[in-house]
Image (cartoon, rainbow, N blue to C red; front, top):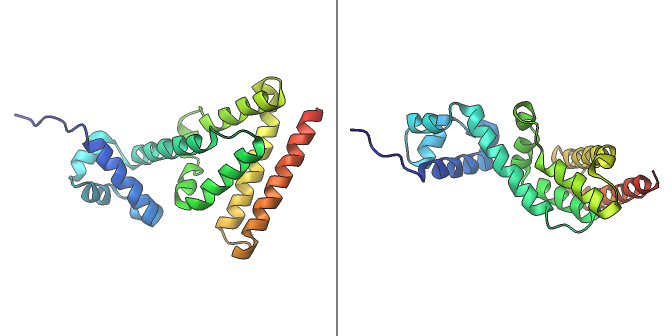
Length: 180
C-alpha cells in the first residue's frame, strides 16, 4: 500500500531550494542537496520536479512574483525603477536566476514587463503597446546599471551615485517618450 502524498512537501522542497540558492547560488543547488535540506529523499524531489531545470523554473517564477509584488504598488516610473534597482541589489543571487533567461526560453509571458507597459499607459496616457520601446530602454538601462554594480565594475562608494544617475536617465527617457 502506498503512502498518501504529503501536500506540504512541495513547499518544503521549494523553501529548501530557495535557501540553498540564496546561500550558494547555482553551485549549491543539486537535487540531492535540496532533498536533504527539505528532509526527504531525492526520489521524492524528482516526483515533484522532473529535473533540476523544472525546480529552477519554479524558483524563477516565485522570484518573478516577488519582484512583481515590489513593483506593483509603485506610483511613478521613477519609483518603479528605484524599486527594481533596490530589489536586484538586495537579492543578487535571486536576481541572477531571475535574469538567467530560463523563463524566457520556456514561457513567453513576462508579468513584470507587462506591468511596466500597463503602468506606462496609465501614467503617460495611451496604450501599453505604444511604450514597448520605452520599456525595453528602461529594462536595458536598469539591468545594465544593476549588473555593473553586482559585478563590481565600480567601487561600492559609487553605488548611490549610480542609482541616482540611473533614475535621472530614466526621467529623461520618460520625458522624451511623452514627446513622441
